[in-house]
Amino acid sequence: MSRGVPAAASSGFSASEMKVEPLFSEEQIRVRVEELARDVSRAFSAGTEGAPPALALVLANGALFFAADLLRKLDFPAEIEVVRVASYGAGTRSNGAPEILGGVPAEKIRGRRVLVIDDVLDTGRTLEKIRRTALECGAAEVLSCVLLDKPSRRETTERADFVGFPVGDVFVVGYGLDLGGAWRALPFIGAVSAE
Ligand code: IMP
Ligand code: MG
Image (tube, rainbow, N blue to C red; front, top):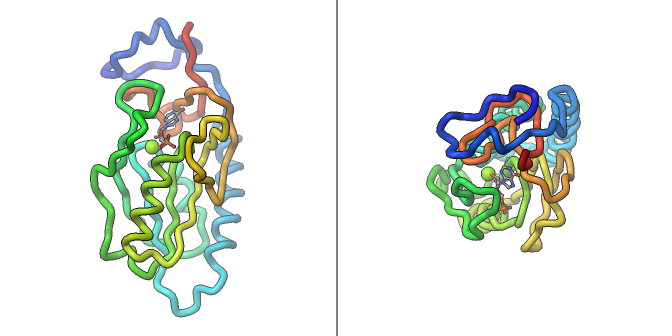
């Protein structure tokens, strides 16, 4: 692996056979997250007189870092809940059936404007499932914000309302994103490839 980036010991991947090529630097991410926060704030501040505060649903684990940065920049008081979703085992391909492991605050969703925050929009199955679940719980509106969008990988009609960066068909790690547990805490985003 290049640039002395440490892989998590528990990843099960042979770090010596993989390398991480930087795609988006800390600074690029910081600037883009600020822009996203402005766009999201504009959308959520319209017509909120007397309405209950918006509810941010953060899809863990991948979106944790992104959401922590984005949420601190919003200029409206969102309530925050973390929903645990899993669609990947240790590999780089979604298993096609994302599972909500827990954390959907059904009683809080009714009548609220919901902002779903995820790391990567890939096939779209995760967002599709969360959107459907939120609407079934009675959400007034569901908007979504993803840091990365891979349009070439879409297998559904899902689209995100706010997108940080479009990327091609590469597997990305860092800034909360992992490959089988490895590289999640990198401060930048990089593409993984075989060495
Ligand atoms: P989808 O359901 O196929 O759209 O997949 C979305 C989920 O897959 C995201 O929430 C991510 O956690 C994960 N994912 C997709 N692509 C990547 C990637 O390149 N790196 C890390 N996680 C990814
Ligand atoms: Mg995820």
